[in-house]
Length: 286
Image (cartoon, rainbow, N blue to C red; front, side, top):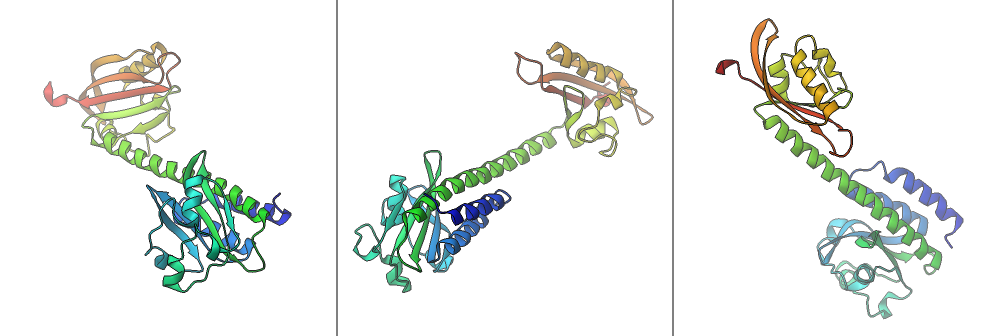
């Protein structure tokens, strides 16, 4: 069973790591906090990349020095943990056939004992957390149990960071695509509140971001663009797309002919999440 003081450390780690959005910052924080708690002279957090383990944080040996060496899944103690997805404690590293002394020989570090656990997300190995040389006595079973729990916590935190990075990249791509459109594009929710508008939309409608901003009601355009707003409202009610329409509108005192169409956004079986409005300035084509 995990010892009482481990729960306090676990609470502090859980409290802090979910504010982090960088893998190396996360790995470094976890390693330092747990190394202090277990009172060890060294430790490493590895991330799995293909069939290798990549050091992301280290104590006892400088990280850049450690990154000079190759760590394969299935080789060494960390590699064995990654392969079996099971924690491992070694009381005497020198007599364990799974131990690789390559780093010790090259750096002068002397590994006596080891405890390591997989970093898991579900059943997927994301890496390994490993601690070396407990300062007072051997590693206890409770130490191994503790870092096994931390391995699962770290796996969840790393997945969250990974998803956030993917989401940010997806949002940037989506925005780039929207901004590249020659047409104006506006997406509203079912209450006519603005969710997205590209630069061309503001240009065609003669509005600024101060006048039309995310969360603002598109109903504010009703006096100047009644046919367009009616089109969007019909789509939200009927759940059916409206093909291209045309209308002549007064945009900041100048007549402008606008072609527009609207489609529902969301599942067909239920009420639409919102609607997407596409429109073009076709004044010069009159």
